Image (cartoon, rainbow, N blue to C red; front, side, top):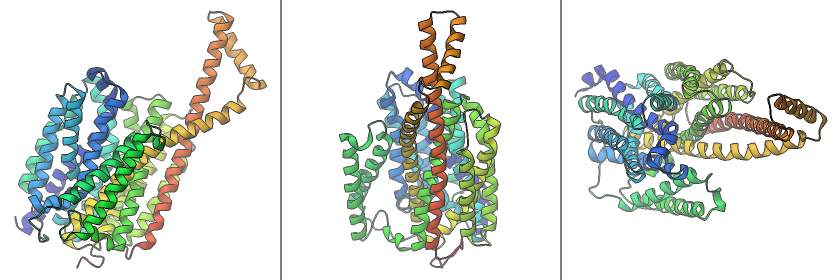
Length: 516
């Protein structure tokens, strides 16, 4: 396929790879709402069924930094199409699993296929779109990245309400088949290929699996195991540190590394990759916390939660279109800094939420949040790799997305831990001020007790109901205060991450220096 044909087909190629990428991202969150059904159908506990998600994410994260090497080794079109097919076929077997062991195994296979779909898609779009249209390409790609995690719980909730949990996997089959066919027919091989050694860096691969796998499992299980008080978590930490140190040592000493860490010598790439970690932390933490807040604390359905999150996804698309178009002409750092400031403003609004808000009260802050993320994502992705040579792009996009994914894993783990910790702190403070000995509380308990007695029941039963209601109010308010603190922390995180912009050599989003 010549350059003219590639150029004519660029939007079809973009549609195909973004379709596959959205499948992967939706599947990273869609399972959460089906967990109760899985537990009942498979006869397992919550801790056991958690491995359905853990296995998928661990496989996904391990494969991310290898995508550049595998693309060169197998051919980019073969590797990407094969990954889509692997993801799709494993989805079929996930839906047909009759035991937890089978489901976890096929989720690991699915995660192995899905790991290629994000970073390789980004590299493909950089290659098929001309430099002056990279902003448009990343805006198209970013819509999938932002919308996928948002739609996952909504789609999953609708499917599990109307059908059964296997259908959250079966819906992937027709979409995956279309994406695989289109990528096989349309995706070209890259023009710039490094010289590949016939030998395989097996030691590097083994160390990477041990290190990244240990980190990811530690993050997934840390909260349930009381973190470093647990011997299990201490073991995962030791595996992570040992594996990563050995991996870095191996990759820097071998002539043909599986992951070329020398790309980190580029200051702008390293700074951008570090910011991607913070960006992923804030994005995934908020995507995790907001549905929990709206559904578990305020009692809204998964479908209504999805509807209120939709304006944020649409605002992200608008922000990406603006950031992608204008950052090609102006300094990308302005958009990253401006988007970070808007994100802080949105999180400040989130931190003012109360238990009395309605869904309409959350729409404006969520929309502002989406716009902010859109303004940051495209300029950040493009500026981070702008200084890399064309042959380094697959390696660079793989590491960039790895850091974003790891940031997301850390963000989700911290969210669970902080919510638990902040709720306990807030409850202790509230109990001190809302003890039954205080006059206002005693009057409130008396009114509730009398009301309960009018509905029937003894005085002792009425008092017990009143005490239970008071504890329920305290618990609910403590959770609300915990969410408010967490939202504010997310806003501060991205603002602090924006300080990394001082290490950027240039604000150009194409051909910053080393690329040509």
